[in-house]
Length: 116
Length: 165
Image (cartoon, rainbow over all chains, first blue to last red; front, side, top):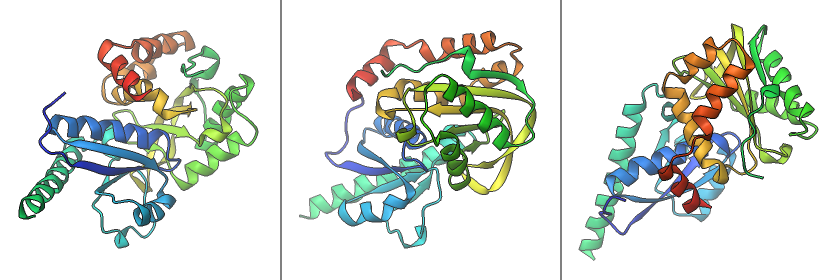
C-alpha cells in the first residue's frame, strides 16, 4: 500500500448501463491508479439514470462512466469516459486525466484546509 | 455460489451469425439450457444492448453482453467466436459500430464478489488471449485458455478479494 498523501477520500461514481459489470471493472482500475498516487477513494456503482438523484444527495468529486449520461452538460462534477480502461485503446490518456483531476481535487482540499 | 462457471456447453466455435441478435440468442439459449437464467433474459440482453451497447475496440473487437442480476441464477460466462464479424455498437461511442469477432455473455450475481474474475477479464482484453481464443478450433481449447487465465488466482488478487468480501 502506497503512503497516503491526504486524509481526503475522493468520492467517485462508477457508471455503466446496468450498474454492474462495466462499472465494477472501471472502479477497480481507478482504484489501482489512485492507490499508486497515494490517494484514497470510495467508489459507488450506479446506472446512468441514477446519476442526477445521486448527485442531489451525496457529495461526489468525480464521475467515471462507460455509458452516456443523460443531461451530462448540467453536471458540475468532472465526468471521465472510462471505456478505454476496458479496451486498452487510449488507456494512457484516460489514466493521465484521472491522475490530474484526482490530484487537483486533493490539492484544492489541502489548500482550503490550510486557509481555515 | 460465487464461483464463475466455465463450461464447454456455454461455448460456440466459429459460429456463423448474420447479426448480433443471432449471437445473443445462441448464447442466451445456452445459459437457459444450463438453468442459469430466468425467463425474459434474452429479451433483457437484447434491450440492454440497444440502450447501453457493450462493443469494445480491443485488438480483436469484442462485445461484453450482460444484464442486471435479477435475471440471473448463477455467475457464468458464455462465449462465441464468429466465423464472420458482426456489428455491435461501441460502448464508448454508441453511434459508431465495431466489427466484433468474439462475443462474451456474462451472468453476474454480485460483481463485488467477482472482482477477481472481472479484473482478469480486463487483462484478457489487453494481452494476447483474445488472439488465442480466436484461433482456437475447439470448445475444449477455449475452456482451457479461459480456465488458465481466469481461475488461476494469485495471492495478491486473493487478498484483494478477501478485503472486498
